Length: 184
Ligand SMILES: [Zn+2]
Image (cartoon, rainbow, N blue to C red; front, side, top):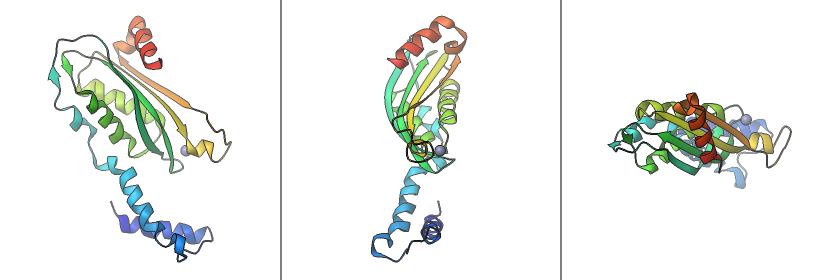
C-alpha cells in the first residue's frame, strides 16, 4: 500500500474543503489517516482462505455456530465505516476448524472497501468451498455511518443481511433451525 500517496490525497482533500493543512491540528492528519487506511484496508492483500487450511477431521454433523463476531468495515460507496456483528454457522461434512478462524475470515473480508451484501456472501461462499460444508448460513447486522451521519441521518438504524448455502438453503427445516440460532 502506498501510504505516501494516501497522505498526498488527504492533504489535497483538506485544501479542497477550504482548510489549511499546515495549521497545528491538521499538520499530522494526512500521515495519521494514511496509517489508519493501511490498517482498515489490510485485508486487501490477504487471502482469507489461509485461515481454513488447517481444518481437522471430526465426526460431528450438527450445526456449528459462532455468534456476535464484532467487525468493522469501510463502505466502498462513501469511504465511511460500517460496523456491527457477524453470526456464522456451518453444517460440517467431516471437516471442522477452530472457531477463532471464522472470526479471522470475517476480518480479512471486512478490511477492504466493501458493501455489506458482498461481505455476507463472500464469507458464506468461502466457508462452503474451503470446508466442503453441507451448509452455511451467515447473518450480518451493521450500522452504516454513511447513513447515520449524512443523507437521511437515521441514527440507530441497523442493516441486516443474510446468505445461506447448501442444505441451509435447500432444506426448509435446516434453514429454519439455523436462522433461529443466528437470530437469538
Ligand atoms: Zn455508504
